[in-house]
Length: 256
Image 1 (spheres, rainbow, N blue to C red):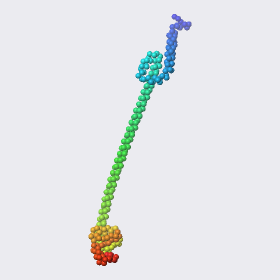
Image 2 (image 1 turned 135 degrees about the vertical axis):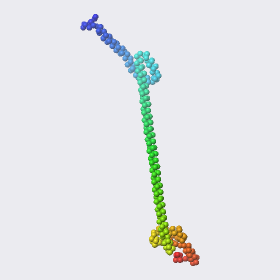
Image 3 (image 1 turned 180 degrees about the vertical axis):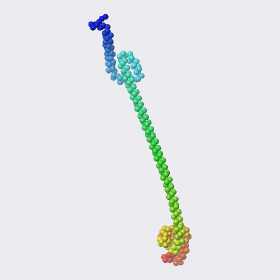
Image 4 (image 1 turned 30 degrees about the horizontal axis):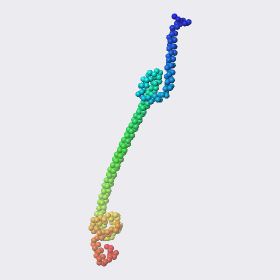
Protein backbone atom coordinates (compact mmCIF):
# COMPACT_ATOMS: atom_id res chain seq x y z
CA UNK A 1 0.00 0.00 0.00
CA UNK A 2 1.39 3.38 -1.05
CA UNK A 3 1.85 5.87 1.74
CA UNK A 4 3.19 9.39 1.84
CA UNK A 5 5.95 10.52 4.12
CA UNK A 6 3.42 11.13 6.90
CA UNK A 7 2.12 7.65 6.68
CA UNK A 8 -1.34 8.51 5.12
CA UNK A 9 -2.37 6.22 2.21
CA UNK A 10 -2.65 7.99 -1.22
CA UNK A 11 -6.01 6.44 -2.16
CA UNK A 12 -7.61 8.57 0.52
CA UNK A 13 -6.97 11.68 -1.66
CA UNK A 14 -8.38 10.14 -4.86
CA UNK A 15 -12.06 11.19 -4.23
CA UNK A 16 -10.95 14.71 -3.38
CA UNK A 17 -8.93 14.93 -6.57
CA UNK A 18 -11.87 13.62 -8.62
CA UNK A 19 -14.19 16.23 -7.08
CA UNK A 20 -11.78 19.07 -7.86
CA UNK A 21 -11.39 17.89 -11.47
CA UNK A 22 -15.20 17.59 -11.84
CA UNK A 23 -15.74 21.10 -10.51
CA UNK A 24 -13.17 22.52 -12.92
CA UNK A 25 -14.78 20.63 -15.80
CA UNK A 26 -18.28 21.83 -14.92
CA UNK A 27 -17.11 25.42 -14.57
CA UNK A 28 -15.53 25.22 -18.00
CA UNK A 29 -18.73 23.82 -19.51
CA UNK A 30 -20.80 26.53 -17.85
CA UNK A 31 -18.43 29.23 -19.09
CA UNK A 32 -18.68 27.91 -22.63
CA UNK A 33 -22.48 27.83 -22.48
CA UNK A 34 -22.83 31.30 -20.96
CA UNK A 35 -20.75 33.10 -23.58
CA UNK A 36 -23.15 32.55 -26.55
CA UNK A 37 -26.18 33.32 -24.39
CA UNK A 38 -24.77 36.65 -23.28
CA UNK A 39 -23.75 37.50 -26.83
CA UNK A 40 -27.13 36.62 -28.30
CA UNK A 41 -28.97 38.35 -25.49
CA UNK A 42 -27.11 41.60 -26.10
CA UNK A 43 -27.75 41.53 -29.84
CA UNK A 44 -31.30 40.21 -29.65
CA UNK A 45 -32.70 42.69 -27.08
CA UNK A 46 -33.70 45.29 -29.70
CA UNK A 47 -35.70 42.60 -31.48
CA UNK A 48 -38.03 42.31 -28.50
CA UNK A 49 -40.02 45.28 -29.76
CA UNK A 50 -40.37 43.73 -33.21
CA UNK A 51 -41.29 40.42 -31.65
CA UNK A 52 -44.46 41.99 -30.28
CA UNK A 53 -45.75 42.07 -33.86
CA UNK A 54 -45.69 38.24 -34.04
CA UNK A 55 -49.30 36.94 -33.93
CA UNK A 56 -50.30 34.89 -30.91
CA UNK A 57 -51.09 31.85 -33.03
CA UNK A 58 -47.43 31.69 -34.19
CA UNK A 59 -45.99 31.38 -30.68
CA UNK A 60 -46.31 27.60 -30.58
CA UNK A 61 -44.57 27.29 -33.99
CA UNK A 62 -41.74 29.49 -32.75
CA UNK A 63 -41.33 27.39 -29.65
CA UNK A 64 -41.24 24.17 -31.73
CA UNK A 65 -38.72 25.65 -34.21
CA UNK A 66 -36.49 26.93 -31.45
CA UNK A 67 -36.47 23.61 -29.64
CA UNK A 68 -33.86 22.17 -32.06
CA UNK A 69 -31.52 25.17 -32.38
CA UNK A 70 -29.15 24.44 -29.52
CA UNK A 71 -28.09 27.40 -27.44
CA UNK A 72 -30.42 29.83 -29.30
CA UNK A 73 -33.40 28.03 -27.75
CA UNK A 74 -32.92 29.90 -24.50
CA UNK A 75 -32.98 33.23 -26.32
CA UNK A 76 -36.11 32.43 -28.33
CA UNK A 77 -37.87 31.10 -25.24
CA UNK A 78 -37.02 34.34 -23.49
CA UNK A 79 -38.32 36.41 -26.41
CA UNK A 80 -41.59 34.47 -26.52
CA UNK A 81 -41.85 34.78 -22.75
CA UNK A 82 -41.41 38.56 -23.02
CA UNK A 83 -44.23 38.77 -25.56
CA UNK A 84 -46.37 36.58 -23.36
CA UNK A 85 -45.59 38.89 -20.46
CA UNK A 86 -46.56 41.91 -22.57
CA UNK A 87 -49.77 40.17 -23.54
CA UNK A 88 -50.49 39.36 -19.92
CA UNK A 89 -49.68 42.96 -19.02
CA UNK A 90 -52.14 44.24 -21.64
CA UNK A 91 -54.67 41.70 -20.46
CA UNK A 92 -54.21 42.92 -16.89
CA UNK A 93 -54.57 46.51 -18.07
CA UNK A 94 -57.80 45.62 -19.88
CA UNK A 95 -59.05 43.85 -16.77
CA UNK A 96 -58.22 46.90 -14.66
CA UNK A 97 -59.85 49.14 -17.28
CA UNK A 98 -63.00 47.01 -17.25
CA UNK A 99 -63.02 47.07 -13.46
CA UNK A 100 -62.59 50.86 -13.56
CA UNK A 101 -65.42 51.24 -16.08
CA UNK A 102 -67.62 48.94 -14.00
CA UNK A 103 -66.84 51.02 -10.91
CA UNK A 104 -67.70 54.19 -12.82
CA UNK A 105 -70.93 52.60 -14.01
CA UNK A 106 -71.82 51.60 -10.47
CA UNK A 107 -70.98 55.12 -9.26
CA UNK A 108 -73.16 56.68 -11.98
CA UNK A 109 -75.94 54.25 -11.18
CA UNK A 110 -75.71 55.12 -7.48
CA UNK A 111 -75.70 58.84 -8.32
CA UNK A 112 -78.73 58.41 -10.59
CA UNK A 113 -80.54 56.56 -7.83
CA UNK A 114 -79.66 59.38 -5.42
CA UNK A 115 -80.89 61.98 -7.94
CA UNK A 116 -84.09 60.03 -8.55
CA UNK A 117 -84.68 59.67 -4.82
CA UNK A 118 -84.03 63.39 -4.34
CA UNK A 119 -86.40 64.17 -7.23
CA UNK A 120 -89.13 61.97 -5.73
CA UNK A 121 -88.54 63.55 -2.32
CA UNK A 122 -88.88 67.07 -3.75
CA UNK A 123 -92.01 66.09 -5.66
CA UNK A 124 -93.49 64.59 -2.51
CA UNK A 125 -92.63 67.72 -0.50
CA UNK A 126 -94.15 69.94 -3.21
CA UNK A 127 -97.27 67.78 -3.29
CA UNK A 128 -97.58 67.95 0.49
CA UNK A 129 -96.99 71.71 0.37
CA UNK A 130 -99.65 72.18 -2.31
CA UNK A 131 -102.07 70.03 -0.33
CA UNK A 132 -101.38 72.06 2.81
CA UNK A 133 -101.87 75.32 0.91
CA UNK A 134 -105.13 74.06 -0.59
CA UNK A 135 -106.33 72.96 2.84
CA UNK A 136 -105.30 76.33 4.27
CA UNK A 137 -107.14 78.24 1.53
CA UNK A 138 -110.16 76.00 2.02
CA UNK A 139 -110.16 76.63 5.76
CA UNK A 140 -109.75 80.38 5.19
CA UNK A 141 -112.58 80.33 2.66
CA UNK A 142 -114.84 78.42 5.04
CA UNK A 143 -113.87 80.77 7.86
CA UNK A 144 -114.61 83.82 5.69
CA UNK A 145 -117.93 82.30 4.60
CA UNK A 146 -118.89 81.74 8.22
CA UNK A 147 -117.80 85.28 9.12
CA UNK A 148 -119.78 86.70 6.18
CA UNK A 149 -122.79 84.64 7.16
CA UNK A 150 -122.47 85.80 10.73
CA UNK A 151 -122.06 89.40 9.60
CA UNK A 152 -125.05 89.04 7.29
CA UNK A 153 -127.19 87.68 10.10
CA UNK A 154 -126.01 90.48 12.35
CA UNK A 155 -126.77 93.06 9.68
CA UNK A 156 -130.16 91.51 9.05
CA UNK A 157 -130.96 91.61 12.75
CA UNK A 158 -129.85 95.24 12.94
CA UNK A 159 -131.97 96.09 9.91
CA UNK A 160 -134.93 94.31 11.42
CA UNK A 161 -134.29 96.11 14.68
CA UNK A 162 -134.02 99.47 12.87
CA UNK A 163 -137.16 98.71 10.89
CA UNK A 164 -139.07 97.97 14.07
CA UNK A 165 -137.68 101.10 15.65
CA UNK A 166 -138.60 103.21 12.60
CA UNK A 167 -142.06 101.71 12.52
CA UNK A 168 -142.55 102.38 16.22
CA UNK A 169 -141.38 105.99 15.77
CA UNK A 170 -143.62 106.42 12.74
CA UNK A 171 -146.62 105.05 14.59
CA UNK A 172 -145.90 107.39 17.49
CA UNK A 173 -145.27 110.66 15.57
CA UNK A 174 -147.16 110.36 12.27
CA UNK A 175 -150.32 112.10 13.52
CA UNK A 176 -148.35 114.96 15.06
CA UNK A 177 -146.34 115.39 11.86
CA UNK A 178 -149.46 115.33 9.70
CA UNK A 179 -151.15 117.96 11.87
CA UNK A 180 -148.17 120.33 11.88
CA UNK A 181 -147.53 119.92 8.13
CA UNK A 182 -151.18 120.54 7.25
CA UNK A 183 -151.23 123.65 9.41
CA UNK A 184 -147.92 125.01 8.18
CA UNK A 185 -148.09 123.89 4.52
CA UNK A 186 -144.54 125.04 3.75
CA UNK A 187 -142.32 123.51 6.40
CA UNK A 188 -138.69 123.99 7.27
CA UNK A 189 -137.62 120.55 8.39
CA UNK A 190 -135.12 121.78 10.98
CA UNK A 191 -137.87 123.80 12.68
CA UNK A 192 -140.27 120.88 12.45
CA UNK A 193 -137.69 118.55 14.04
CA UNK A 194 -137.23 120.93 16.96
CA UNK A 195 -140.98 121.11 17.55
CA UNK A 196 -141.23 117.31 17.63
CA UNK A 197 -138.04 116.74 19.60
CA UNK A 198 -136.62 114.57 16.82
CA UNK A 199 -133.64 114.74 14.53
CA UNK A 200 -133.97 116.08 11.01
CA UNK A 201 -133.25 112.61 9.57
CA UNK A 202 -136.03 111.07 11.67
CA UNK A 203 -138.52 113.74 10.47
CA UNK A 204 -137.51 113.13 6.85
CA UNK A 205 -138.03 109.40 7.35
CA UNK A 206 -141.54 109.96 8.78
CA UNK A 207 -142.52 112.29 5.89
CA UNK A 208 -141.20 109.79 3.32
CA UNK A 209 -143.33 107.04 4.83
CA UNK A 210 -146.37 109.37 4.80
CA UNK A 211 -145.79 110.17 1.12
CA UNK A 212 -145.56 106.45 0.35
CA UNK A 213 -148.55 105.32 2.42
CA UNK A 214 -150.98 108.25 2.85
CA UNK A 215 -152.99 109.44 -0.20
CA UNK A 216 -153.15 112.99 1.23
CA UNK A 217 -149.39 113.30 0.80
CA UNK A 218 -149.15 111.96 -2.77
CA UNK A 219 -148.80 115.47 -4.33
CA UNK A 220 -146.41 116.93 -1.75
CA UNK A 221 -143.21 118.56 -2.96
CA UNK A 222 -139.65 118.47 -1.63
CA UNK A 223 -136.91 121.04 -1.89
CA UNK A 224 -133.90 118.93 -1.17
CA UNK A 225 -134.05 117.76 2.43
CA UNK A 226 -134.58 121.20 3.95
CA UNK A 227 -138.08 122.25 2.82
CA UNK A 228 -141.33 120.32 2.50
CA UNK A 229 -144.53 121.63 0.86
CA UNK A 230 -147.80 120.00 1.79
CA UNK A 231 -150.30 120.38 -1.07
CA UNK A 232 -153.49 118.54 -1.90
CA UNK A 233 -155.49 118.07 -5.07
CA UNK A 234 -157.96 120.74 -3.88
CA UNK A 235 -155.08 123.18 -3.52
CA UNK A 236 -154.07 122.49 -7.13
CA UNK A 237 -157.64 123.07 -8.32
CA UNK A 238 -157.97 126.38 -6.41
CA UNK A 239 -154.66 127.55 -7.79
CA UNK A 240 -155.71 126.65 -11.33
CA UNK A 241 -159.09 128.49 -11.04
CA UNK A 242 -157.43 131.59 -9.62
CA UNK A 243 -154.93 131.65 -12.45
CA UNK A 244 -157.68 131.32 -15.07
CA UNK A 245 -159.85 134.06 -13.54
CA UNK A 246 -157.16 136.69 -13.03
CA UNK A 247 -154.83 135.68 -15.81
CA UNK A 248 -151.98 136.20 -13.48
CA UNK A 249 -151.09 135.57 -9.89
CA UNK A 250 -148.87 137.43 -7.47
CA UNK A 251 -146.29 135.90 -5.19
CA UNK A 252 -148.52 136.59 -2.20
CA UNK A 253 -151.47 134.90 -3.88
CA UNK A 254 -149.30 132.00 -4.88
CA UNK A 255 -148.45 131.30 -1.27
CA UNK A 256 -151.02 128.84 -0.12
